[in-house]
Image (cartoon, rainbow over all chains, first blue to last red; front, top):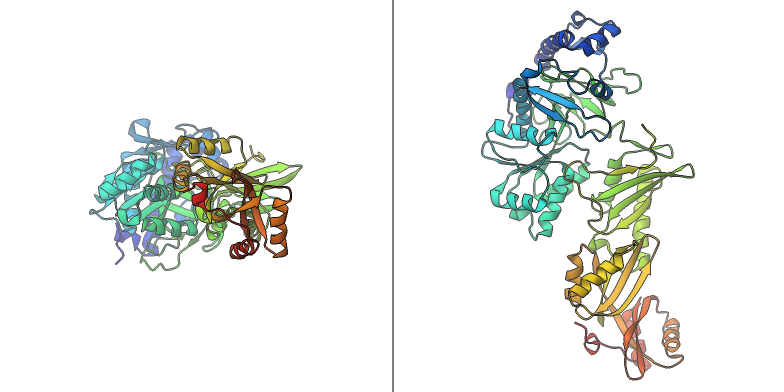
Length: 435
Length: 142
């Protein structure tokens, strides 16, 4: 029997959700216009006044926000409350340019915990459970976000944070953790270390995992589920919008329900900005309608996805988004062909390789080159060059067939690709086509 | 029949040094060794005095290893000795995957390590021609 954290919202009628959205949006737009000079100027320039927004249907009239806007107003320029009301700050890793800073009031943290509690409940979490949080704690939203959800439900929440994987295994075993929260690549790594340490899924008590913060494929999901003996659920979020819990997966595992009472999602054509109908692929755009400190409007996520309102077997009526099918900015263009790292991962797992891989892209004599490095396992190792060359060739052919562009394959020794305790680095693009 | 230990190596400086160092630290004696290499990777094949211990030592170093059965042939240690064996194999259509020599030798025989397409056939062929193989025990390998 499917359990909900807040059935009155999660199974509300579309009309009820629309009414909540309109009410919350109007209040937020008015507040933002009054309190944030950046938005006021932007709206004035676009010729939109708060009173032009009469319901959620008018959302398209508002200008978009971009990551660059957050950098330009760094650190507090988009906050809509006085700093004295902000009780928590988070920030994104800031590997490119300035960090993205997000502020939360006490009520914002409450709502965030509520969103994560819905996600954990959908994964089967109750007060009886032991939630093992192996997302990093700190400025990154993953750790404290999942933590808030566990506490809200009243589950025993273990703030392990990321890293020291041997200790993660010990804690899983000794504390009897039942729900694991971390990035999917870290879940893979934990599984590897579990088995390397001589244990199997039978030595731990996990039943579910809530994994997010990076793209992962369904093939990777099957591997994680199999190795850890769990059901693996996806969770979506971004610092700019809130953190994990913007949307979450249910038992159906075919997409993530968006917490629509707090966020309005739109799918747009990334080139024209035109709003697209449901069930059409485009860039996901989010508007925060209940956040106090940092309510971003029409934020361009660069995530490519599809929104659907088709009936879900879990009983939730909240709109569902597909797993992002890549990001408009992580898509590689190799000799004119669009390549998503997730496609390469799919091929690798299908061919029996590990998900420990690295894609090296370069440009030699004005031609793009792509090398896929993947670690070899004992099962795949042969003592003849002929056999190994055959394996490399087979993988190269499988990649070529799916991607439509050839890639050089390079087999590496186990553990030669650096493991990440947070977001895995999958692509090294030496071409420097951007920035 | 003799067990051979193979190791996958990335074609990078220091890789073989690391493997031999790990074997040394575990008191392993390498009795024969050969390397097959491409631009990207190499395969190090060895006969060692204690294969189980050597394998464990290498796995501890995150190496990918494999054990394979090979045939060690006692070849007459005189001009034409190796040619004679190889001609016999060629005539019998036995395909050689790889071969290398052992440092050890008998009184008037040299030892060659073979990995072939059809091991049973090779053994029969050698017996028919009054040539012998050398066992792991005779070589003092375990």
